[in-house]
Structure formats: structure tokens, C-alpha cells
Amino acid sequence: MTAWSFQEKSKRRRIEGEDLLKEECKEPDSENSERGSEKDGSQKSPSDACIRKLYRSFTPLSAKLLPGIQLEARQNRPWLSVERSRLPDAGLGVIALRPFRTGAILCQFEGSLLPGLKSNTKSKDCADGGGAPQIADRRYVLRLCSGGWLLDGAPVARGIREGAEEVEIAVLTAGEHIRQKRPVADVGVGCMLNHGTKESVNAKFILIKTHRSGILPAAAYLQAARDIATGEELLTRYGNAESTAWG
Image (cartoon, rainbow, N blue to C red; front, side, top):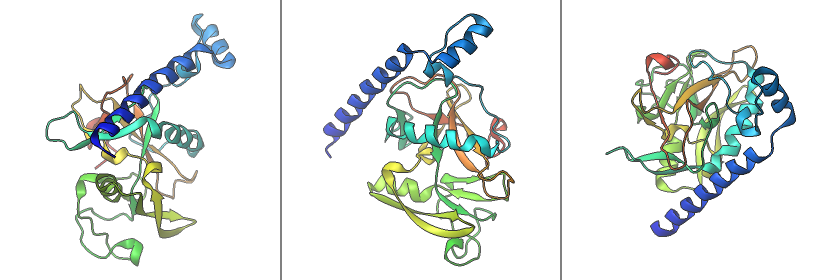
């Protein structure tokens, strides 16, 4: 695909995204409208229903929230484009192709799941038979607050940069640590978000339990910390006081 055709495609998606948000606002949801009317006399649209409280980021949330959060992240995946960052010398970044309301679940941070070991330890890859994981690029590593697991987004970032159709990541399935191939178009792009200042950040990390007991590693998602406009780059904070779950 040429640079011109890519830009044209992104432009069309942005226009479609704004039209979609306008369409959502036309038909108020009866249940949400009634709830809003009881509280403040206003009527709320389906998109307003997404304006929910910002979830805490320092501890995993209930597993009951996972299905809805997963679904919203999948639905929003086509409306996020990995393009050249608006920040100087930042490489690639994630651009919104439609407006997002405060509280919207933007995307998942996906990557290879590695057992609780320090990210600078060099040894055999755990998915290939034990030992400490070897992580070549620690820029894409998150330390989860559940069992000390690490989430290495480097395989996803590398696949996106190289224009690959699939990426291979280590996952935990039915208690077994295996490698799995995923289409790049379906993988969450959370690992591609750049770090922003406290004033510029518009997305925040949240953790969701994948099992009610909390014994399994949590899933990582990004939530809109404020309203996000079409064409705006998504920026988050890594390892800051507001997001102590991340190393």
C-alpha cells in the first residue's frame, strides 16, 4: 500500500468514525435515559453510557467486568491506527480515527505473557521450557500486579513495524503456557502508545482479573481518561504515581 493510499484510508475511517458517533447520539437508550432523568432530569444517549467513572489502575478489577471490556476493546480496534507519532523522535504512535468519550475502553495491551521474573534477566524463554525470560527490548514490558507476571509487547510492536500479517506471542491457556499466532489486525495495540506528560495524557492503564480467584495473570487495557478527538494521538503514563501497577 502506498503512503498516499494509506493516508486516504485513514482519512475515510476518521470521517466514518465521526459519523458513527453522531448516529449513536441520535437514539437515546431508554434504560439509560430513565436513569439519567431520575438523577438530573437529563436524557442520556448510548454513547453517554460510556461516560463512566474511571476505573482504578493500581489493583486488578473484578473478573465480572472482563467480558464487556473485552468486547468494547475489540469493537474499537478498527478505529485505532498505528501511524507516525505526533511527538518528535517518538517513532510510531496510536491515532484515534473517531472521537472517544471519557471512560471508553480503547484497546488491550497484548504481548507475550512471561512468569514473574525481572525483566533484565537473561536466560531461556519460559514458553520454550522454563527458566527466566530473555527480553531484548524492555521498552514494551509491563509488570502485572498478579503473581509478578510480565507482559512483553515487543513481539506485537515488531510485527506492526514490519507489516507482518501475524504475530506469535506466549499465552496461558487452560493452565498451559503455549505459543499462539494471532492476526496483527486483531491484536490490541496498547504496547504502541507513547508516554505523555501529566497534562497531555488521555489514556490510563487498568487491570482486569481473568479469574475471580485472582490466581491467574490479569489482563491489561487502556481506558480514555478524558474525551479524545478524531486524529488525536493516544498518550499514557508508564510507571507513574497514578499507575503504580506498572513498572
